[in-house]
Length: 206
Image (cartoon, rainbow, N blue to C red):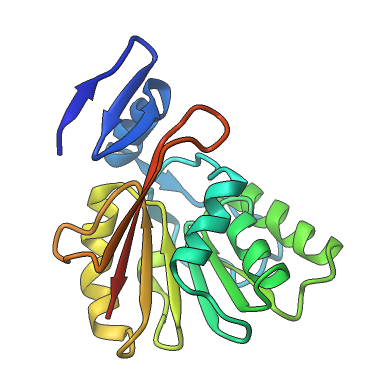
């Protein structure tokens, strides 16, 4: 993995233009475990007291969310998972716009509550769901599409799990960071997300 300086405020990482502050968050997330602070009842509550943080929370711009789902060829009725679903924006768009059966996996209690409440408010509870738990300990055998925005170390830990579980033909779309063990079927560069950031998407097929 190489870092190329672009300016005082931005760096180029793996082909994607990222704010320097975000890269610092990535570095910290790679080295620190995260505590699961769940209290009370939550959807599919995490069992472990400590879950490794595989990426900081950095919301994907809506235009990139849409392009990820397009790039993955998501169709109505398909089963998709967003791993590290944050505020649920990918899950919500997958269910609302693409009419998919969408599930997010998120360990952070406030983000789980926020995304679950938004799904309920939008009337999407039948087709959009959030699992409160460790994304490395879920079953993805039913997936037609997986979307991820994780650090490279997270992708490396996830890849053997997906190799064991995923059915033939399942697509995986990775945002900005590739899976080092796999060769992408396609790569798509997005020069501007409307906020001055470039992005790179990787498409893999099981």
